[in-house]
Each structure stands twice: as C-alpha cells, then as structure tokens.
Image (cartoon, rainbow, N blue to C red; front, side, top):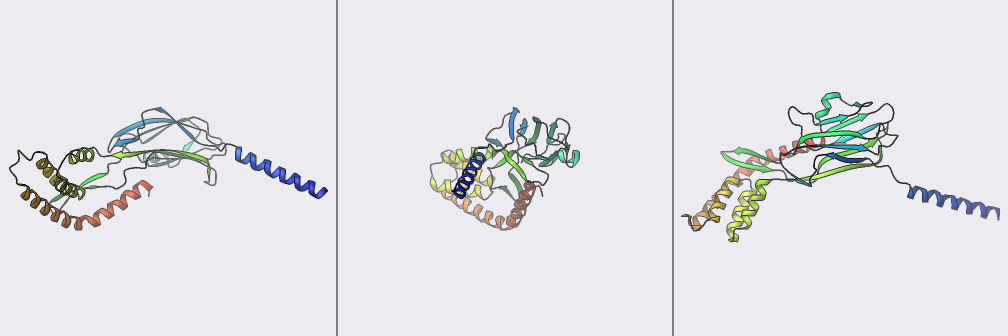
Length: 261
C-alpha cells in the first residue's frame, strides 16, 4: 500500500510539473513600431526609415542580435541605437552592417529604441554582352527582412522566441510591362514578347510590344515582326550563353551579401 501511495504521489507531481511547463508562457522579444510605415511590399531601391522599440528581453540575455536586409545609404548609419549601458560589438563600423549585436555587462533595460535607415535591395542589373543590353533579375522577391531580433545567453543559445518582420520587393517596370502585355489579344505575339522579356532583352521586347499595341498605325507586317522576334531570340540565346556564368557568380555574391559573409 505504501509503495502504491508513493507511486501515486510521484505520478501526480509529474503531471503537475508537466502542466506548469505547458502553461508557463515563453519569453518573447517584442518589437513595437514607433515611427515609420512597414508595408508588406516595397519598390526596389526605395529609401526607408523606421523606429522600433525592443522589449520583452529575458533577464538572462547577454546579447541582443539584430539583422536586416536593407542596405546602408551613404552619409547615414544603417543602425541607430538609443540608450546607454550596452556596447555595440564591432564599434561604430558595425552600424552599417546587415547584422548587429548589443552586449550588456548586467541586465538589459527594457524598451531599447532602434532606428533603421536604409534602402530596399535593387534586384535588377543591366549588362552589355557582345553589344546586346541584357537586364537580369534575382529570382527571390519575397522573404526580405525589415528586422530579425533574438536574445542570446552567454553561450549564444537563443532565449525564448525572437521576432521578425518581412517584406517583398516589387519591380515597378515589371508590373507595368505585365499589365501592357496582358492587354495584347494576339496570344502568339504575346508569347514572343514575353519570351524576349524573360531572357533579359527588355528593349527589344518593349519595341515589339509597342508594335502589338498599335497594329493599325504600324506599317510593319506581322510576319516581319515575327521574323524580327525570332532573330532577337537567337541573339538572346547567344547572349545567354555568354552571361550564364556571370549570372551564377552574381547570384552567389548576392547570397553571400545577405548572409553577411
């Protein structure tokens, strides 16, 4: 009977502890927007400035790690931290890096004001390959980070839950082009124009789109336009072979930049 009672008590204690662990709220870092406007999407190259207040910092935190995908602008620090009692790892030079760390000898004060001033990444680049103007774009347009904040302990283990705010990057020229292209009734012509554009031959695609938009005023026969498009496709193919390796290298550089390598 005694053994059974002890077993019953142990099981009850285990259930109580499990219940407390499940119900106990986990610490979560909070970032409250104090100034600025964080839209779900931003045009490439747009200048942005906003201020957040970081709170909910666990008492065990020794490091506050913050990162952003915004790019620094000449003459303005990417990060501006208000407050005292903490240090910026790397000093002033770190204020323009994609990642920043705050350290504290004692306990972090709650409510750290952080202002971020930067530029939205530009996803399109223009290169001249064998005399042909080729416009390249990065495949990733979503998942860019306004801010990502985590609290770490002395062993750099994450404490509780961090906080993240993301956005997507829009390319205004692409959106306008798609709207115009969708208005073209000739499906074959639309496919030719779209293929040119996707290969980076945007000047040629726009010229052909202008023809498609005003067929009555144009003196260029449709068959001639198709032949021109075919020639441009061949040029695009040859150009693509040349800048294929360049594209791969640039993509790798792009990924390294955002990883902070």
